[in-house]
Length: 401
Picture 1: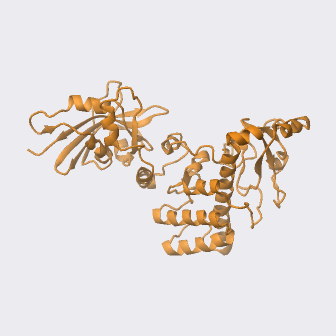
Picture 2 (picture 1 turned 120 degrees about the vertical axis):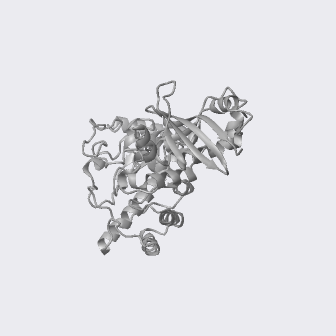
Picture 3 (picture 1 turned 90 degrees about the vertical axis):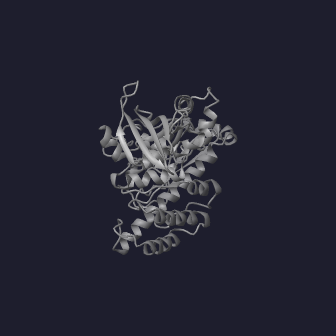
């Protein structure tokens, strides 16, 4: 999709800590296609299109991060890539089978990761309050080293706008495959001088969307975001905003990987213990993604791919009050039992549709035998635009007689 050909020996300056941290802190996510992960989701996710195995991704991630840390450049990364592919027996990747294809693929992986991580590190530096106080304006700089400049990128050279202008939300560099443009910060005096010189406004039509890419005209598909601006956004939000796509073939594996590395902010047992005494808290606890969406979807006739698994703040209190020891085989659930909630759903011995909830939502009943005890959990299916989840409504435990 690129419309320019970058020079092979692209320099990104001396590696700096903010850039390296940005790369290191990414979660490795398996993908089938390069656009399974889009826009700002790249702030949290490391991908190599077609690489779905965890150990393969781990080695590729390590190679990219090491290249940035040591500043060893493209050729060193190419050697690492070749060794990693051979080690894992990875075949079928785009570019495989010819020296030209391999050179192209390694350049794309290297250049895109170096450019976006460098931009993200610079964004962190430029948005520091002390820096913004001295340099509140940002300026678009087109690289002179590009052999075949994109006309629009060249036309944006010198544009100088306040750091919070909406232009930067979509036009912060890089703006496409091989883009070597960059953004620098300048003083208020410089910004005002640029305005007098006619560079204080974005060009007319700058926010027009190209129907072929879904991005602003002149920006490649998926590059209409600011690298580094969404590093604190919960990964689950990217999934629910459709910036991370769950291909059917790897949905369960991806869910498990996300659950393993980016889990709840605290253990469910600790959350349950707190909620039994803290009635002021109204925020639910996220305990991961639904790992068996196909099974649940068939059961209720609604696609729950990408749905989260939540424990509402009032559920531990409801369970404590309503499902106590009945004098027979039912025992009172303890806070520690809430650590089993995800397992009960994602590895259920039995799943069935329950009665509609009081809000007329579908429910799912999951049952699992854990150490000889039968855990039965009821989940309400929430399909709201910003809260697509299976929300725990009750937890009942039957013991041995």
